[in-house]
Image (cartoon, rainbow, N blue to C red):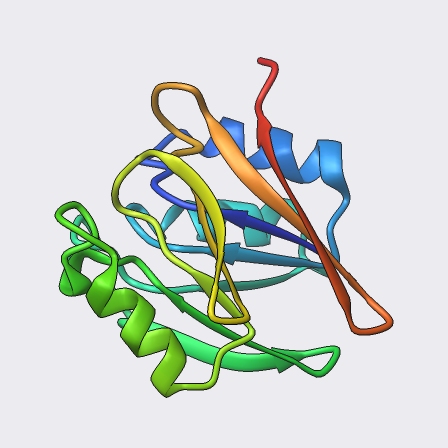
Length: 155
């Protein structure tokens, strides 16, 4: 399954639409800060599954603070990261992922792309798709293997 993970779109809906057009994912995960951009994404791609969490810039959001689910036998935990203090360190968010036995931990908030493995857990921050370098992550989960690439939007 091909998954597009994006965060911090900050109203730059076109960047999100461009990334979906470029990648053709089966699932989009939005890690907060202007999750309302997902409404426009859902309108443009009505058959695409979109999951989102609330960021610190998502006032009156209907989205949850975090989400956890399984895709192709891989447990995914996603959060914006502001409640875990990710701008000052990853300890709290890593612990949250480990407590949930996540195979993949996704977070945003810092606007800096990051990828590492920590105690068997793939930890990914796709960066900001709406500001700066305009990056996002593409995960490909197939036959128990997970591949991840951080991509900079060319536009």
